[in-house]
Length: 203
Image 1 (tube, rainbow, N blue to C red):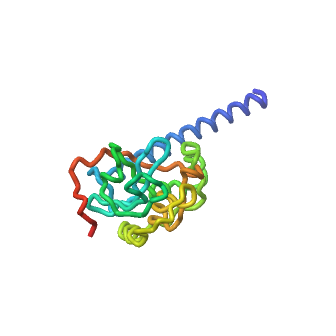
Image 2: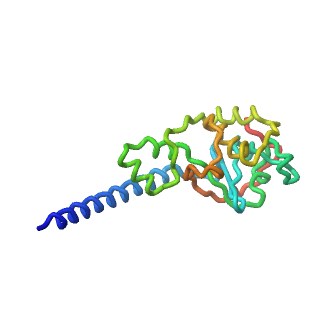
């Protein structure tokens, strides 16, 4: 057997090993993701939730009892956007589902060993972040969100709803819709069927 034949055999074995490892990592991730699915169609207090509105995504912080804090206005004008607490109906604006950003999943991927992480990045090529997030607890996240109520310094690129929600949860103002740095791991849930009072508020 010539040198090139041996090299081809080695290359094929390496490729097969990489394929098996990638499949194993994907299976492990799917199992981990399934354990994170909630048993009710409501976010947890302090979750960063979002909806897809055509070509962009809108984000906010769930504060409990069907209430959410986010950048919004009552006339759909960006110039009047303000950080407000509203009911989920106002946040969804007709959308039939929402997603929850899974920061724990992102951190777990970023903390993997070099080979496993490289293979995972092959599955999620937009993950460019080089360090895990600091994640505030649900209660801390809600407190941070309430501390920003009434602020009107909205900017479509520099200080939008995603910047606000990520800051509440991690202390970092980021908007991956514009930077395209991170492939968010999130799950889509059906709209909560129970009617929620606009007067209710998280305790």
